[in-house]
Image (tube, rainbow, N blue to C red; front, side, top):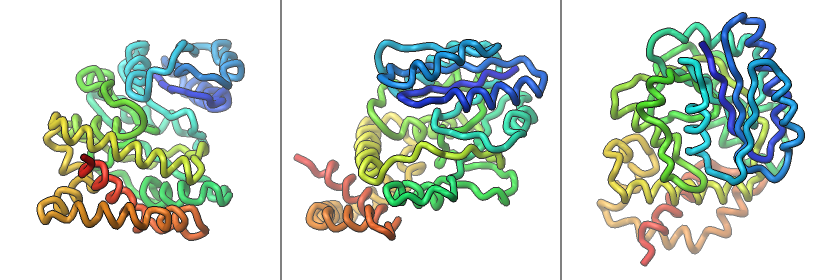
Length: 298
């Protein structure tokens, strides 16, 4: 019936697995929970008791294999027809989380449950990450079920038929941080597979500090540019808003002025983004400026 798959790296997830295990047991279904540790240096001892729970498996890798490959390994380990992928820094607050997904375990399907943020976490170090998440990634609990556009497909919390996953899989050539989920969504788009959104979010509790968030943002943009230059995914320009904007700038030869504005004012942007009132407009320009910078590098 259902395989719940969680990659983890230097994060304690015993409480997460315990909650999922309890919900699956109460649902009286055939299930398994598989956790693969991606070469962590910490938290392994905290996560090993997962093996003591029925129908649960904890696998430790000796080295870090990355965000794409570990998800493929999880799917290879899974024995059931429907897969739920969750990030390790998720928290389950809905007591019907597993049950809510079961209604969609029929036929061929891809369902995104979404992610929300803890309203009580107002620590200034995480302000940028939280504001970005709430405005760009969080789904309101009042939203009705609807078809969900592939161009914003994300991986923290989704259900997928194993048959679809085996046909697509995550691109293991993508190294470092960023856009393996974008490419997965593009592949779904190319194959004409519809993605649905339902109101079944997890809480994102493992927030990055602002400095880390900006570094990951730059890494993700660099990955996106490499994917663009490879010309492997013809839908990528349409499915990435920032790449689409970059192409418009390039047509008018504006990528160089944007690059130099970014280089000159980057310290000011960083100061603003790490301050009390980070602007998502400035963050968007920061991302676009970094893209122009790497695209025009000689």
